[in-house]
Length: 179
Length: 183
Image 1: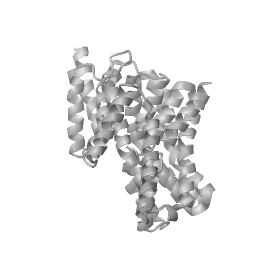
Image 2: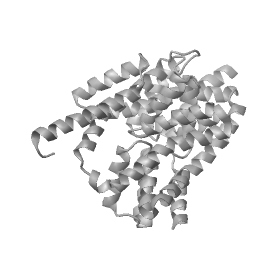
Image 3: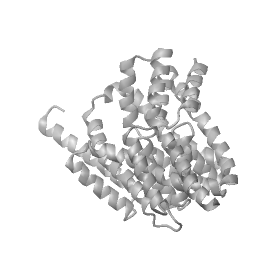
Image 4: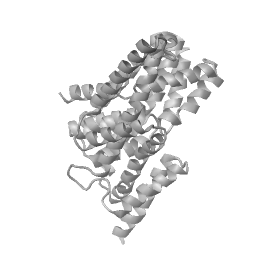
């Protein structure tokens, strides 16, 4: 059982490129179709939870599935399976990369890959902006400018957003009775 | 000393890494480039490019890579371990109270309040990578970079695979800079 869990997530960790959302369909197939460890509905519920908690979504999914199957040891086994292959690959690349880093061809390639990476990071902003309300745009702009220009730590904004939301929900619950 | 700093930084990144991969990258950039100045923006972007092209979640891959760059194999282990630790604990806790938390108005409101903050964080990270305030030539040395940037955005809009986009821009770079210098 543990071995199966490890092997499943080992495959997911080793063969999904692009991380995060690219991994979800693969995990879903492995968990709900191949092994029937979980029903589809439960998997979807779990995704909501995995998105709500901090950390990469694929990691959270692994922990959830592992924990469901075999408690703490299962959670850790799934996590280990997931991160071991990328860990090994990265170590190999990181050890090798300095040798070719100053090769002019490699430098040329990375010179254009840098703006490409920035575009990859910019894309989720474009996607999410469409789903935000006007107050969200205002918050976004304030956070962006103060983190970028004033070098404030984004952690404070996350904490105050959470605190405000809790306070507001509490106030609404007191006022409205239910909810 | 550096191991301890790495541990604390990545624990923070793991703990506040709401919104998954890209939101975490902005935290990582804030810690690694801005606060500690362990890497320049260009070095950070290179690591991101490599982390995107290798299998696995980009936040974990970059943690391993940055840890290795700063303190060898122990650094890689420490950074990877500490970035996973909060996710592991919080997820186990959430799973235990899963049924109670489902459709909890507090949780829902906290998430929707955090979303614009996360988008702002990513936007800040993008701005920093575009207009770096540190030394060096940065990520956008000339007009070719902006062509690549626009091309990639167009590609993403057309749902082209991001890894393919990275490979294409690498080829473009080899073509533009490599061959021109060689001739």
